[in-house]
Amino acid sequence: MVAFFAILFTGRYPRALFDFNTGVLRWSWRVAYYAYGTLGTDRYPPFTLADVPDYPARWELAYPERLSRGLVLVKWWLLAIPHYFVLALLLGGLHLPWGQCGLIGLLTFTGAYPRSIFDLVVGLNRWVLRVAAYAALLTDVYPPFRLDQGGLEAGTMR
Image (cartoon, rainbow, N blue to C red; front, side, top):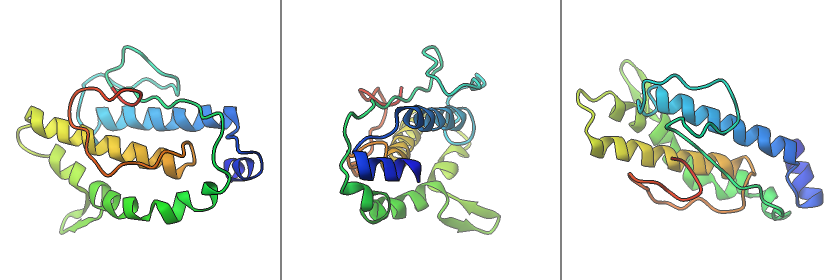
């Protein structure tokens, strides 16, 4: 709520709050990469919100000098609704007899974990993080409806 009103009245995200929120998303991505969000490494994620250059999962978001004061009123709920439906399927919108499970969870529980499935899971997680950053008002860049599978995406996760 602090960020909402700060952006609404000043057009700026408070820097300390921005750093904290991006740090939380960064740490969440490292935990997901280690755990059943990706199963990408056996290396335990560090307990820090700061960037750790030698950890295999990284997430970066540049601080925006100015944000739209008008978009803050609609982007986190109205504009993000289509993404929320997709994310429900990716993260936990499937109700199975043994519990709730999303596509990402199902893909990581395959008997084999071929590179193509790993790349798909990383791409799905990139989508999740883009939407999370947008909904948390950290950026005005609308998340694209696309998967970036494999490789590196400039300026985001590695």
